[in-house]
Amino acid sequence: MNPQGLIERLDQCIAALGRGNTQMKTLGLEKAKTERDYKVRQAQEILILKADKYPATLIMELVKGNEEVAELRLQRDIAESAYFVGLEAMNNLRLEIEIVRSKLTWLRNELNNS
Image 1 (spheres, rainbow, N blue to C red):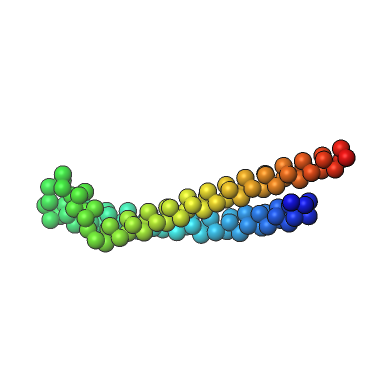
Image 2 (cartoon, one colour; image 1 turned 90 degrees about the horizontal axis):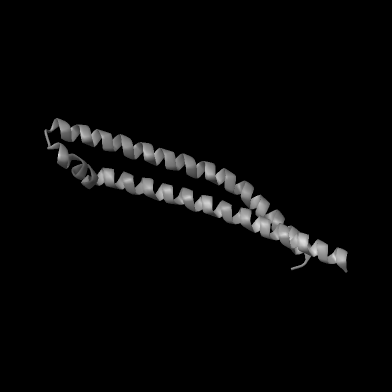
């Protein structure tokens, strides 16, 4: 790849990294919101089952089997997965930036030596 192409790719990666920061904030907020919703509903269901005098050893299993709690847990897991996928994408962009910078440095050294 020529130096101009590398510089363009570097600019693209830097722009993508900036957009990724904004997206990570959104993903982080969604992750926290779904965690909150899940924990609140789980606690409510636990209190309901305790009030209904279910054995303490069964309560957590019954809560996990509740459709609404299970759906909220699924949404939480999806949000968490999306967040960590976003983190890895950001790490990949950082790595690509370093690779492009290394190639540019190598090309500069080659041009200086010739």
